[in-house]
Amino acid sequence: MESCSEHHIATARFTWLRRAVLLMFVAAMWVCLARPITASDEEKQAAQIRLGARLFKEDRFASRKGDLITSCAHCHQSNEDPEKPHAFTDNFTRSWVPWRAGDPRRDGARNAPTLLDVTALPRLHFDGQFTSLEELVEGTLAGRNYGWLPGEEDEARRLVYQVILEDTSEVTYARQFKEAFGVALNTLSPEQVMNLVSKAVTAYVRTLRSAQDSPYDRFLQANRLDARPARDESAAAYGRRMLARLAELESRAALKLSPDFTAEALDGMKLFLRSEGARRGNCVTCHAPPLFTDASFHNLGVSESEYDQVHGEGRFAALRIPDSADAIRPSRNTCETPVESKPERVDLGYWNYVKLDDATLRRAGESDDRFLQRMIATFKTPTLRNLNYSRPYMHNGAYPSLESALGELIRLSHRARAGRVRAADDELAKIELSESDIRPLITFLNTLNEDLKARLATTSR
Ligand code: HEC
Ligand code: HEC
Image (cartoon, rainbow, N blue to C red; front, side, top):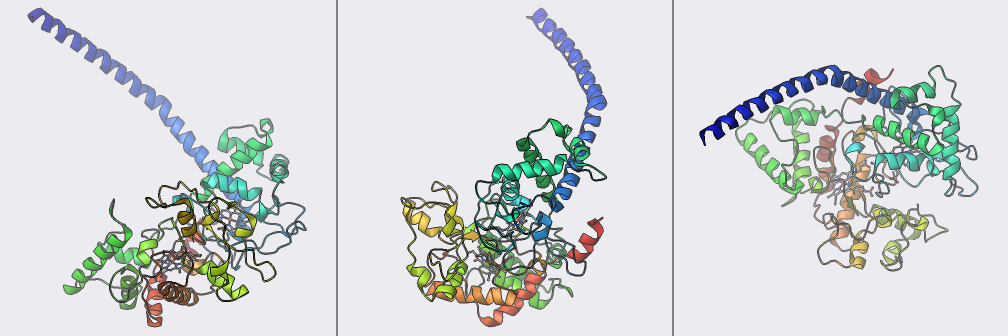
C-alpha cells in the first residue's frame, strides 16, 4: 500500500512537472505567436470595415438599364448635409428606385428605416424578408433598389465583379480586398467577390450603433434606473417596475430632472411605460428598451389605413386574402403600395414571409389559417431612438411628423377597440390616450435623440 502511494506521489510529481513545463512552453508560444495573430486579425477587421464603408458609397453597382445612379448611402444618408444629419435614412416617403420598363415605378415599396442598431435585429426589412445582413446586402445589390428585375441576379453579380476588378482608384479594390481578406482578387469568381462584398458591407453596418448617450440615457444614469428588462422579465413588467421606482423616488423628492429631461418628458415617459389603468400608452410592450423595439411584428392598422384612403372605407376589411392552403407567399401583389387602378395590390408585411411553424409567434393550438390571419399586415417594430433624424414615419412613410404618427396611432387604437381594424394586434386596443397626451409623449420621444450632428462630424473623414 505504502509503496504504492509513494509511487503514486512520485508519478504525480513527475506529471505535475511535465505539466508545468508544457504549460510554460504553451505560454511562451502564445506570447510569440498569438499576439501578432490577434493584431493582424484586428487589422483585417478594420480593413473590412473600411472596405465596407467604401462599398456602401460605391455608386457604380446600379444596373445600367435603370435611370438612376444609386448606392446604399443614397437611401441611407448620414452627414451629406452637415446641418441636417440623417440616421442613415432618406427624406422620402418611399425611397426612389431606378425606373425600368419591365417594372415602371419611381417609388420603392417602403420607407427607408434607420440603420442604427440593425445589427441587433434577427430579421430585417419591415416585412422580415431577410434573416441576416449578409443575405440582405446580396439581395439588395442584385435587387430592385439597384435597378435589377427578378432573374437578373447573375448580371448584377457580374457588374459588381467587373467594377471591383477593373477599379483603378488611387487605392484599388484589389489592394483593399487583399488587406481585408488576404485574397488575390483576380483568383475569385463573381459569386466569391459578391460574398466578400456582403461580408465587408455587413462589417461596416455592424458599426452603426446608437451611442446611448441621449438625455433619456443620462436621466436613467442620474437616477440609477435600470436601462433594460431583467432576464425573463417582460417589457410590460419592466414598465411596471420602472413606474413603481419613479413613484418611490418622487415620494422622497429624490428624482433628478434636468433641462433636457423635464417634468413634461417624465409625464410622457410614464405614459410610455403604463400598460394598465388610465392614460396608458402601452408603448413599452412593443417598443422595449434599451433599443425601443421588441424586434417582433405587429399590425397597427397602418397598411389598412393607407389601403382604405385609396379604395374607400371598409375595403381592406372586405379584401379577399387567401388562407394558408392557397396563399402564395411572398407574392408581388401582397408587398405593394395600393393604387386606385389595381385593388389587388396591398402591403401585407410579414404575412409574406412568416414560417407557419414559427415558434415565437404562433400560439399553442393555433391552426395554420388562424395564425396566418393574425400575421396580416404585421410590420417590424421600429426603434424609437433618434426619430429626429429619420422622418417621415411608419413603413409607408405616410406620416411626416411625430404629431401625425401619434395622432394616427390613437385613432387606430379607438378603431381597434371598436373591432374595426382587421387582424389588429391585441396590444393596439390597450392604448388609451387622448389628444392632450401627444405633447408629453413627443417631449419624451425627443429625449431619445442623440447629438448625431456632433458624432457624424467627428467620424467623417
Ligand atoms: C433605393 C434605396 C435603397 C438602397 C439603394 C438601399 N436601401 Fe436599404 N433600405 C431601403 C428601404 C426602402 C428599406 C426598407 C425596406 C423594407 O422594409 O421593405 C431598406 C432596408 C434596409 C435594411 C433593414 C433595416 C431594418 O430595420 O430592417 C438594411 C440593413 C439596409 N436597408 C441596408 C442597406 C445596404 C447595406 C444597402 C447597400 C448595399 C442598401 N440598404 C441599399 C432603401 C434602400
Ligand atoms: C402592438 C405593438 C406596438 C405598440 C403597443 C406601440 N407600437 Fe409604435 N410601432 C409598432 C410597429 C409595429 C410600428 C411600425 C408600424 C408600421 O410601419 O406599419 C410602430 C411605429 C411607431 C412609430 C413610427 C416610427 C418610425 O420610425 O417610423 C412611432 C413614433 C411609434 N410607433 C410610437 C409609439 C408610441 C409612442 C406608442 C405608445 C403610445 C406605440 N408606438 C405603441 C408597434 C407598436
